[in-house]
Length: 81
Image (cartoon, rainbow, N blue to C red):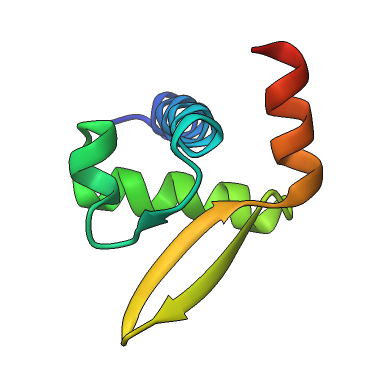
């Protein structure tokens, strides 16, 4: 895949993750690729994009890792949906 096409796809996947997290709240990292119906490598690259932008945070419960939108991002999601 050409670099700009891959970058666009990762951005698209990041948007998909943002929408799903806005709707569902918290998702386990292990389930994320299944929930968004994407390959693991793209799902985690999209998640990295969101993390780099400060739009998500991570938690650990019972040795399982979860991700959710930050409070400001949740507020943005609520205002546009």
